[in-house]
Amino acid sequence: MTLEQESTILAEAQDGWQPFRITGTRQCDMRSRNGRSYRIFVSIPAEQPPASGYPVFYVLDANAVFATVVDAVRVQGRRPEKTGVSPAVIVGIGYQTDVPFASDRFYDFTVDVPTSELPVHPDGIEWPEQGERMHFYRS
Image 1 (cartoon, helix red, strand yellow):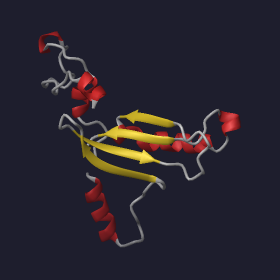
Image 2 (cartoon, one colour; image 1 turned 90 degrees about the vertical axis):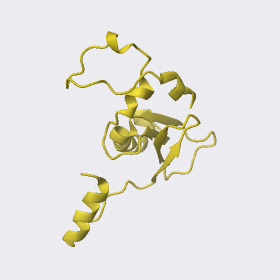
Image 3 (cartoon, one colour; image 1 turned 45 degrees about the horizontal axis):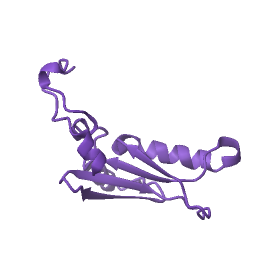
């Protein structure tokens, strides 16, 4: 079920439910220089930045883990003297989908390997297109 479908169901229920949003976060869809589509997620702390600026954490597979990373940094960043974690900007790189792990990640996160050298896919299907890690890195 997509986020839009969930929102529609909740709106139709008319019992006070609202979509949940994480305060201080934004997302936008973009294209890289090589034409690949991504969804960029950003979380900015509410606290005033230190004189040196906030540290920045970059997170891959953002569709799956962005909210978890934001929560962990926010909770631990409240007591940096105890945790060693200070408030930080979180930048997540994900894909234009509502599923946690898009097949595009195989293309972006793998090296080029001949199909004959790959193991059989666990589901018995063809592996998604892959092998462009360096293009992703340069984008």
